[in-house]
Length: 139
Image 1 (cartoon, rainbow, N blue to C red):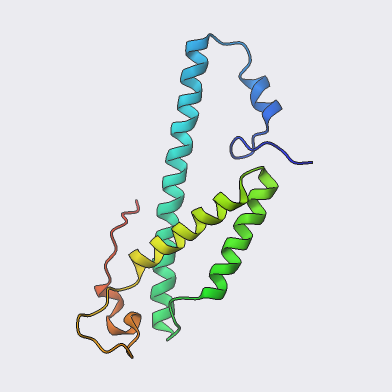
Image 2: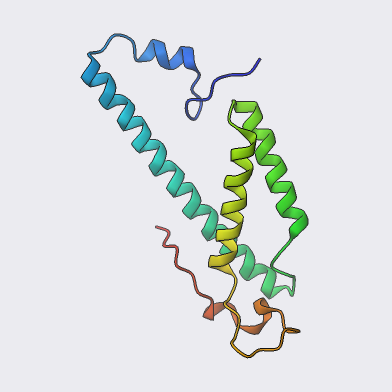
């Protein structure tokens, strides 16, 4: 049985029962509040993901490992599709969202190439971890 996903731990029947008779204006505001909460949780989760990706990139550099892992990226996008299917979310959209997060994680975590540097030098080994550019602030 596929459940309709409404939020962390919520199913349609549970939410409907909990939010039963209200005035139209109050119900409207309640929906807006839930959307605002979902937006905040989403942004906090993305900031946490970027922070963790940055920490992983530092660890990989410290241990001499390549920062990019195309095989793992495929695992992540397949897992996103699977999770999405289980919660009634569009698997293709879930995959695209994760691809965007992966691309942005790389953009924020990998150092910028050094102008005029040899193409044979991997960009992640060209700069020390402390000189990387990160523009995501995490509380």
